[in-house]
Image (cartoon, rainbow, N blue to C red; front, side, top):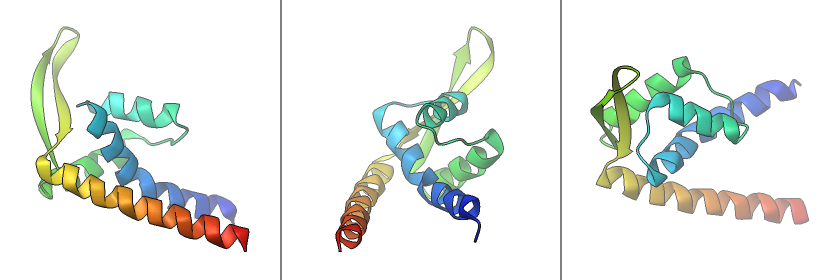
Length: 108
């Protein structure tokens, strides 16, 4: 069995959660989000992140604002909606539960 494939699936599974965690701290535009993910060793490309952000926006979890930039065209900054904050709180609980389950299994 190929561990790279399993690791890739695990990373895809937590990408949404990690993106929401980043946006909980501050609104950001895509290069900022990618930089934060890469700094945490979660490598992602724009082609993966844009569809995720669109899906989260269409689900009412994110909104965005356009801001003028001194270095080119306006930038789209994403931020959590009140529904997104509630959703992230639910994901936090689910993450904590999963961590406890894994820790318990590892200890057996």
